[in-house]
Image (cartoon, rainbow, N blue to C red; front, top):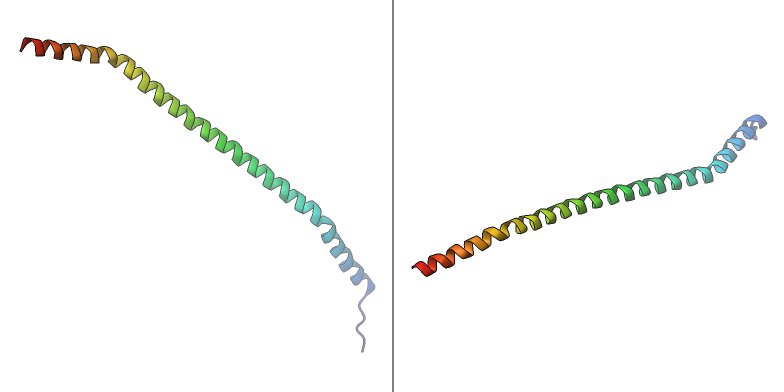
Length: 89
């Protein structure tokens, strides 16, 4: 007893399969573009984070340099007082 399938059912299944196969390249390219956009976003986030860290490091170095500049007189005074104390004793 042969199985008879309605031709409309066969045609509908065939069209659905063709539709899925036809859309797969577009879906793949969409996935590629989405991945590229995400990677670019991460790249910019990392660049901003690195720039922020560099700015903080520069501020720390600037603060250390200014502290050394302001402490020059204090060190000179301390050395002079130590010399005066050595001479008086």
